[in-house]
Image 1 (cartoon, rainbow, N blue to C red):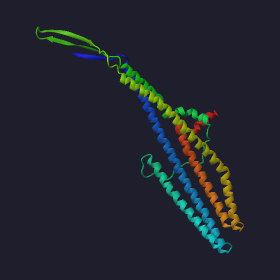
Image 2 (image 1 turned 180 degrees about the horizontal axis):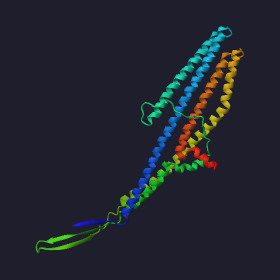
Image 3 (image 1 turned 120 degrees about the vertical axis):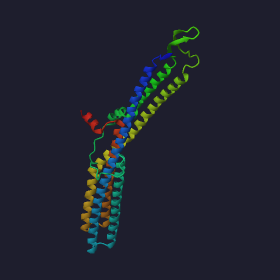
Image 4 (image 1 turned 60 degrees about the vertical axis):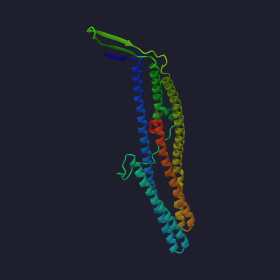
Length: 330
């Protein structure tokens, strides 16, 4: 005998719909992981650029400190200032050289961290090429927040809800019993006769109407909707935090570059000239030098903060700031 199960209630088509949605859902999860990797690489690249710039800054500062030390030594030799000032200059130079060594160590660590993202234990590159001072203007928060729907972490929950709704329909369809059609040949040994036998059977679900499966599917659907709201709130909070960091870092970097750095450099140059002419003492020169060092460090810190926040924001909105600015102009 042979038998064939005939599914009723559209069970097959409903299962196919669940499978198709799961495929789309896997695509969104893949996109989320891809963007995570790209964001991590962008942040690591910014750290390498920042570490390289820090090495350059500290090298420049060592040169300035060495020049100041030579100037002090010349004035001490000429008997114009106390030898104590030479000692102070030497201490300042030593501290600057220590900072330079620390900057080089930080660069080595940053290069290894970046290379590790593509599973390279020893960096094959010697230098990262880029310019931290290239800053893209920050678009308005309204234009950017509307793009949060492009975030795969949020877009996936649309498909997740669809998938669990489709799964609920599958469980509901299971309440409809399936039909079994059978046919075969029977031989009667007593009379040595044969006959064709056909049969149709269908179970009667008196006690089991898949109540448990339907209830579980409903709970899973309700959970998905709640998790979607949680993901949306989390993305909104992360965007607000990253956007504030991005906007503040941009304004801070622009202000330091246009106002603070020129003033600090002018002050240091004037203090050096005045010290050589005997108008200022060494403490005033040292203070001007320290102010310049701190301004350069603050500027680099704001640049790195900007580029890291930019990577985070672009991860959240699924687009680049450059593209958004082009759209705004159009």
